[in-house]
Image (cartoon, rainbow, N blue to C red; front, side, top):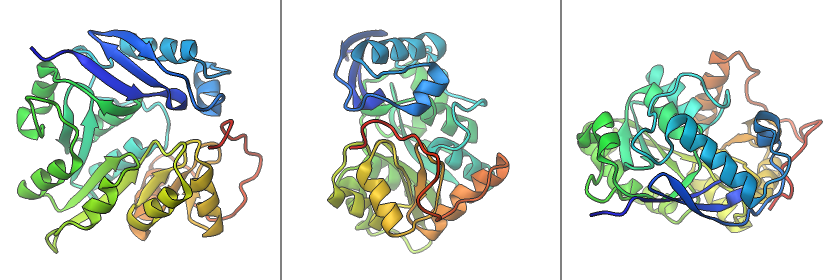
Length: 283
């Protein structure tokens, strides 16, 4: 029998292990203050205890990493995040498929905006997970890359999406060599692949340059190098505390589509942003 175990990197990039619906290990956060969680959840300092309490809140409220997990979301945690941008562009037809990742499911294909929000919103970076058949059945076993293991493999997910006939495919990723590998794949000429990158806290300058070369939309998180590169190259962005930065023309279109829906000003490349309180420290 497969062990029920899910490993995530949560607030401040603290590694958290959840087994059978209970938190069994919490690491030390790499940053101390996140203004977003401070504002929304009243967390003034990121400590292991604060991280534990926040993940317990998620388990209790929407079944995070359990068979009770809610997979659809209509009220977003934030107005403009990666999952919200993707869901808007699934709804308007600019995208027709998301290759995403979900606790208890692993890599999966998503075509419904509400599920894109439900899977990608309110969550942390997924390091590893184990199968929860009840969740897989909700999204359709045919949409799960590996129902037996719930493996995380975006390249297999992309290949499955192409086999199924999708043409405008988004993939959500964290910084890794897989990003470059995807761009080196032999993709059919009538297929477009767009990369949305999260969880950039602590990456190197070299990795930041790689993301801007190969990706379309990037969250700055608490990354010093993403902010530095974006300002040096006057990349378009939205948001001040944790900016969403675009690395391609299509990325800007995706972002602005979302901003129009929620009535926000369109993306800008005016630097430096004014009156900003950054996460502490930027790393």
